[in-house]
Length: 291
Length: 291
Image 1 (cartoon, rainbow over the protein chains, first blue to last red):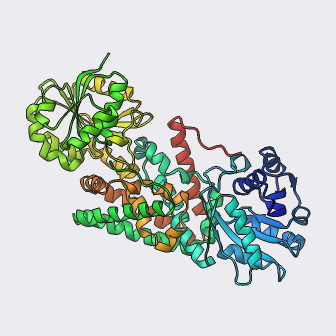
Image 2 (cartoon, rainbow over the protein chains, first blue to last red; image 1 turned 60 degrees about the vertical axis):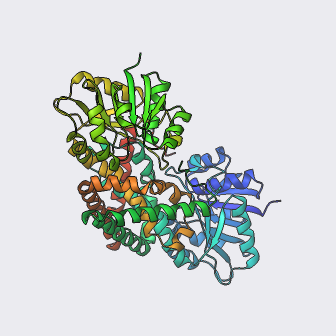
Image 3 (spheres, rainbow over the protein chains, first blue to last red; image 1 turned 30 degrees about the horizontal axis):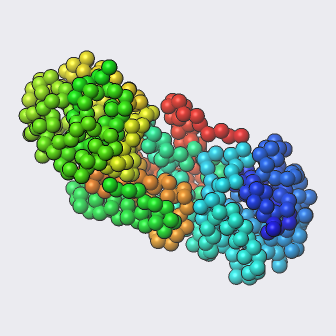
């Protein structure tokens, strides 16, 4: 039985179209609408089967929906909100899937009439590719989906949206927007920055020697520059703080090398290894065998 | 036709046993000997088919070989060298596969009688797993193998060893030991350090939110701590310098965020993306589609 009647996905790119594909494949919505600014993107979303119908008009598309999923890049949100908020059914649930919560929640709430149900979420999955043609119904299998609800969010609506994400294969965690922004800075935004910095800091002659290991490790540096600028811009404080913690850790580690304190250096590597293995175990992933 | 008659692999762990598997599968050596300190490891190497015969005695194992491949951890080399050098046939080729060249070359050369052919190499492939049971005949397919020969290395022997690595699927590049150590610091050793530092710098509550992206990105932080301490210790200067360049790049990037100079920040990400795509293209790997 569908969890929602009509789901409107505003911005059916990689993230939105992957939700659409999974909703349709798993019968979680009676109808999935795609709303976008470019017909070519909507056509692609229709072709891959991510949506049932498409609309270039936000107000028109949103008017029928009992669930509206805002999945555009962050920079597109402010211009969209007036029309979206005006068209939103009073009984509809509005959710969004941006990688930053505090500033995005602010952007959205200032346009929402009182009494509307808005549930911010962040499914932590993605790819260095983008667009509906890169979408996959399995994108959220095994992923973490972070929820940052408000104290007055109706429990029944929270349950229903949680059921949707679980049906998409995600593990739902709830936390505050502030905690969210700090955590994802450390585990997502700063890793992205570091991958780009490793590529940028390498000299041409270093890259000549780069093997598949380096190419794999820096994969996320091929992500969309506009998208990631948006994300880091709207989470700047937490990104700067988490980068400072990383730099401090790196400085400590190389200081051990300079001081020839190899035992402390080894302990640093060993603790990191154990911590990652514990994380693998906690996620039900098997740590590598050591025969 | 085999390129070598008897190849002795000293230390048939992940790297050595993968060479053995490929040599045997591809008929590149008439006989592959494995030399190790622990019978249990040698038994594993025999079981997976990486070697034809095993020996616990370096002198005995090396005496027959026309190619000796030293594939132990760096820290085991000094103690091994006297017996190995004494047993080495005058017409044999000695090679090694360590991740560091300058200091390893020094360790080895001080024990070698004059006139012996020693060709340092570094196949850039690996895994966070270790030991012969993690070995694969395909480990070197598409990998880069760096050669740092000496001015007096006989050209014919260089050609033969190059032919071996090419037959294992690797692309051979030649450079000086100094250039090697600086390049691999930037594209291998520092990425490893960074993966460990990201895990170490994250707080427990950050790791709660870590998704598959973070787990994938930090995979190399699960590597053996002793092995990587060895590597960073013996390449300390280049690792410290490359880490400093990375930190400088990170500081510049977050400074752009602090100064709200998003255009410069975006250009930094875009340049890194383009540089990585150029690297993919240069390696014959297809860059991700952007529909």
